[in-house]
Length: 66
Image (cartoon, rainbow, N blue to C red; front, side, top):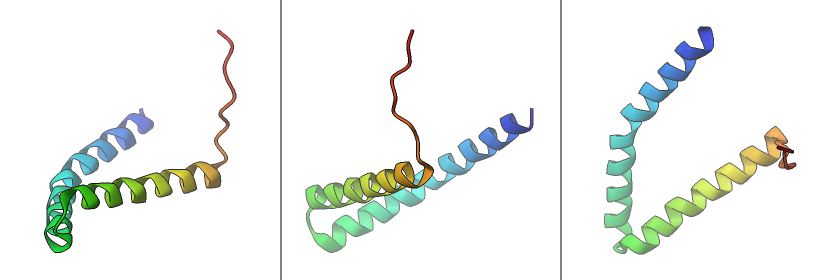
């Protein structure tokens, strides 16, 4: 039950931050002048963040037997 509340709170927070991300991406695109480069930069930063998270959390990618 406690985990459900945490997940609900995280979902609400994530939903509330989406407009902020959109505004930030729009401002970044306007300052760079190229939306394709902006999108590439945003996705590369996300990729680096996820790779660091995976490496630091030591998530195993071993296959599961079915």
